[in-house]
Image (cartoon, rainbow, N blue to C red; front, side, top):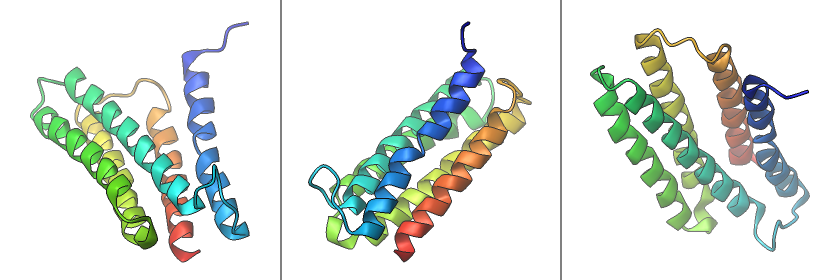
Length: 149
């Protein structure tokens, strides 16, 4: 029996939360990951995922080229990827700024993608926006947990 792409999307989406959670557990236990501070691992993974979502935003923009939001989404997708990259260059000792910037990036990408989908009345794949809402909320909460840890 083959697994549908919709189901794979959901499974991979939730599995993508695991590295965030593992980093948080290591922060709480004061353990390293890959010989790195867990906050460094958290920030690096967060930057990679934000870059990935920037690519998703880019894809949404090129799929909706006829709409005026497309130009803005293309620019924003590049900006978010550069922001993610910038957090990797920031001093790991002052990780709070990086975590805040990444948190802002996740919320901004989510909002931008949602606006494009709303404007274009995009409903496929089914339940995608609901999944994105949940995943973004979880990622946002995990960023807040890192900030208070």
